[in-house]
Length: 253
Image (cartoon, rainbow, N blue to C red; front, side, top):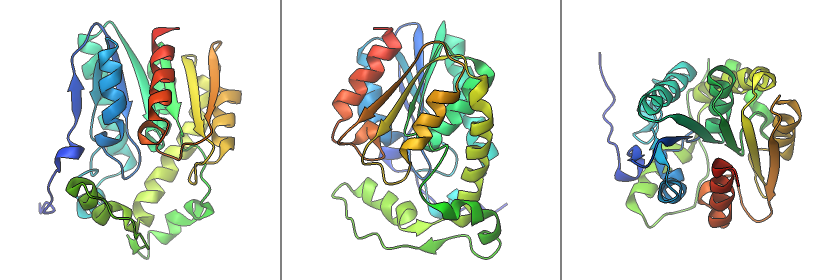
């Protein structure tokens, strides 16, 4: 078997921070990596929680590696990380961003964690082409897209070139599978759930947060909208406020 020639940059390494006997599993998004939760993970750990931020297969390495993975691989990694954390903590809570929010919903519907937080969970997306990806993937695996943004951090710039400078019809079709499964799973969730959305999100519409909030079975639930943030709420202009809200929810305050 030939493996792609990739590297894992430091910003993409999994994060594990030992705390007390309550654990928090963070699940990053599509084409993202653990660095999206770097700030929040440290603050949640400082609040006393044991923290795990796994790197989903094919993410944070290279585009060629990304193309070898599937929705099943991403789900499996999240479930494995949950089991690992549950082995050392009395209780495990789950926080997911974007596709990670979708995976968190699927996981919560089966594992019933006491508390769940979704950040811009992509049960729905603005880009309607997602429904065509099962067909588009038969013709092309990736397509260059204009991405003129540059990053001073060499690790982030590497990720931009490898992931964010392309559209990925093959992998988007895998994301679409997860989106559909998550929408079916929401009605089974009873975890105390904080649904967080961003007013300036250009990827996930507000109706995604409203769908989750209106369809979960949780008796305790809250919808929180941040006015200035974009899609990556955990690492945007209001990350301090978002993180504070997450910690308060996890602590039951």
